[in-house]
Image (cartoon, rainbow, N blue to C red; front, side):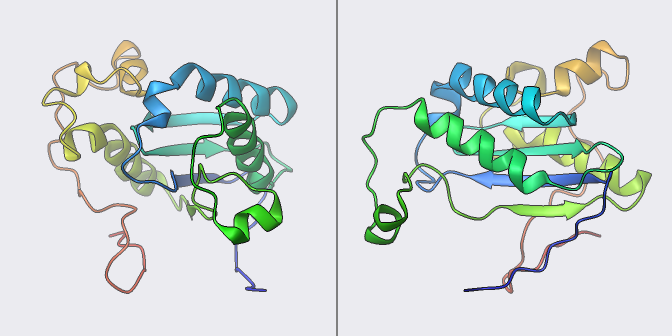
Length: 184
């Protein structure tokens, strides 16, 4: 079994990327109410603060802060992924290894996490999250993408409605050819 080294700093703030197994699928947006329900389900049992989030058809990005003495973000994502998967009809291809484990074929098994180091790192990742629908060609104007905390940031006066990602580093949180995050 592979031993993954994860940072388990209690009360930390994290950037996450979760992908569907089928990167051509649109399940996250076509079943957005199911995904919202999964978040509510997990957050009711194990609260954490969602500082920023964007839902795209095949993946999502989020920045979340755990309670002061809690470092169990894997539990929260497991609950969200399982609740969402159980809410969908079984139409996906399931590999033999997933079938042996009783898993669905909805999500990629792993996800990317990065502990936010400081305010500059936080702002860079929030901007990356909010710019993501435009980066992937879903919209020209970020205000047109409905599944983003961008709207909350506009209502709070933190970003103008016509903000378009000026000055952001488009590769925050992305992996390079060696699989390492490019966080500048």
